[in-house]
Amino acid sequence: MSRFTTQLAAGLLLAPALLAASAVQAHETGDIIVRAGVVAVDPQENSGNVYVGGANTGLEVGVDSNTQLGITGTFMLTDHLGVGVLGATPFKHDIQLKGVGRFASIKHLPPTVTLQYYPMDKSSVLQPFVGAGLNYTTFFSEDLSSAAEGLGFSDLSLDDSWGYALEAGLDYKLTEQVYLNATVWYADIETTATFRTASVPSKVDVEINPMIYMASVGYKF
Image (cartoon, rainbow, N blue to C red; front, side, top):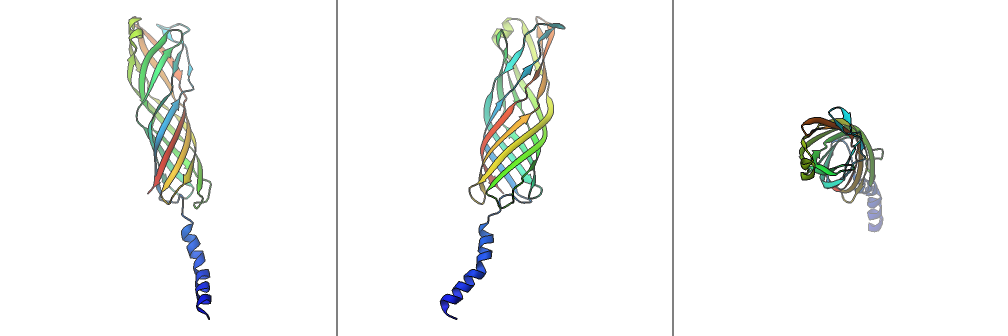
């Protein structure tokens, strides 16, 4: 057998192993994927009317959007199931009292945990996923505007919220460890804002229900 034939035969025998080695595994059991990037929260609010001392004023509130730095983590339970966690730096929103103007500013954190499903084979370069889980939103730094305080408003407080969350996303493999990611969530966030109007107890119920968008770079450990 010639040297060329021997080399060719060896190459053919090694080809499956080389192909297997080149088929870099994307997401598989035990992997930890950390993604960091920008997160935008876009409230789709539906406000009830403001009540002052039990009387309906007919006024409503609105909540603006905000963008912050975000981080997510996924632990792969199997090749197709993972547990995902969403975190971010605090979001800040202005609250508008419709017909009056800027009413207050608030901050919140929306940590979210989901069970994720990855339908593709673990060797796929593209890894779409969907998830469902639980969102907890805590509000803090509730500050009334000077204009609102001048009108006699005081003592603003927002209740924390528990609700469901849905997500859909896509990881695109650049290298063995590095990914590009885009993810969107819908979070069920409902809160009651309580305050005082000229010392009279007042409140308004708000369904914030934001769409949350994230573009990030991921790293697999």
